[in-house]
Image (cartoon, rainbow, N blue to C red; front, side):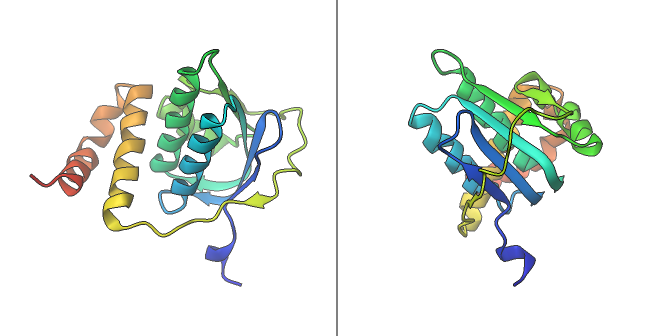
Length: 169
């Protein structure tokens, strides 16, 4: 079975907090399903989420922007919800801090006192159109700019390209 068919995000939507376990690379190609998962569970009233990075081999800015968006949505809840990023390796921690996500979520680089074995249901990655993908990436990067205004300079070229792609007026 090819690597691409293996779920990247394993979840336990019934746990409190809700558990998300990353298996492999988290990227723009598979972050749409995670974004939809967060949105649906927040809509259902879930307010506590823990994301386990122990098996995360790499991640890109779109994935981090999806996490930033979830953290922002959780902060708007009454009472405010929480997003905890746990068992984050050194390289991933560096990326999280460089993009300011640590300002929106609790980051635990050590061992979070939970069993993540219950996060076994895989999220399906559904194919998106080119425009849907561009919107996802654009929105994710807007969330990163909300997390840290310094990100605007880092992503100005990609933002301009994506805005033109989404709305070419």
